[in-house]
Length: 125
Image (cartoon, rainbow, N blue to C red; front, top):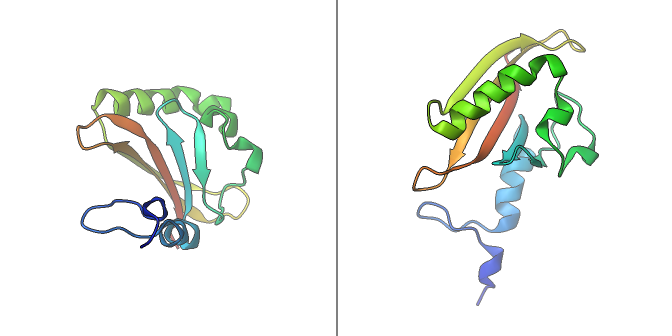
């Protein structure tokens, strides 16, 4: 019998932890998960925006420009209050010159309690 700690309960399925990790790690998107206290708890190996590994366990504000703090705070407040669930915008990546799509998604439990935010960045071309 398999150890139940090897599996994650999802809707109608129980993928192994390794399988779910491969989904996140193998997807060609720059994914970052921020918990409900704005702490970076995960980022994918596929990177569009460079972040040092040391950002894990730190505030998400530590990897954003101070000029974006007000917009980030407004977005997170809207997520926490339930006023919004998604925010997205396109931008030109300064280093590559390519257009990127930046999407933020509020993560909630079954009761609607805010758990954090998923940021996904992909190239549009």
